[in-house]
Image (tube, rainbow, N blue to C red):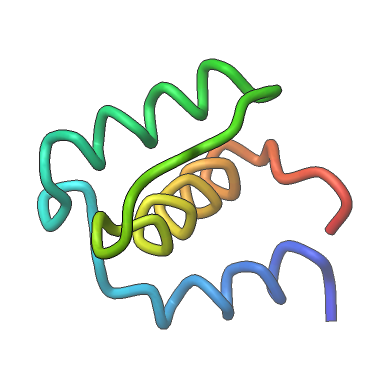
Length: 68
């Protein structure tokens, strides 16, 4: 199976889109996308997993997901 089809298959199960995230989560996704050598420090329950999955999905959509 090709890399892109494997990644696409993984993200078909990702049911949240930007409209489902809070404003600060969308800001985090955009900031991480524009600053690839950065880190995300957020407290418990602020949606780090949703932020990172959304970032990975965005990178995949733009074919910028290295190493897969």
